Length: 331
Image (cartoon, rainbow, N blue to C red):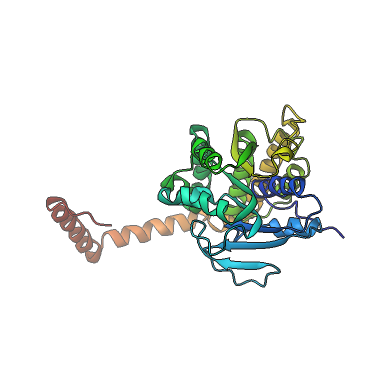
């Protein structure tokens, strides 16, 4: 039975789908060595198993991985790879480049070019106003329930996303030719991340959200996901397979994402329903009757008229005056 991986959030599934399909076109029926830079939470190996590919797949990441894995996992930094030159047929990274400090971004590219025999793929959200606006919006949704930034997006803001033109110049300087494929149209990406963050922070596993992701993942060519402006750009660069690059063309089979929009709205409505059902028992516990309210008011009045409360009030007022006078701010 074929492995079903379409349940994954579409933001994640779609980028690996594009990379794996591109490598398959560049190296059809080949037993190749593939290195993923920054793949601690990758689903690439799931695609390899699903398609019965004969790839020797490896991952390098700065994060420790204690899981039992069927592939080689190295600890290391993407801008200082512990491999000899031209060790891998394909080297790729996805959503890693933007987490590299600015001073190391160029070296991050150069290291992938160094250890690759003939193909480098870099997929990332590159710097643009519309990308930053979209990230600020979905981050605000995450913060609604957590009161803090989403960790990976916070790094985007702090480290700055990479520059697409500068990246391409480096590739050309080292005789690599390339194509750029835009994926995850901004409209779609906002839907993917909004549902994912709402589900993640509310801790409610909605069947309708799973259905939404499965629909998007199995209809990736029919939901206008490659229509510009896109959140993510995938650069496919090679030295000796330049003719094949022209074959990696994404057909924009759909001019709109009407069906996806309908499923997004329905999934959102279903999530609201499930949230309400989950909250009902808690709301009943939090709703006191009239007698309880009267008792609480009497208790509060007794506390406020007590000597202890008055002493405490005096202490707080004095402390605040002293702090204000000396420019000291209490937490």
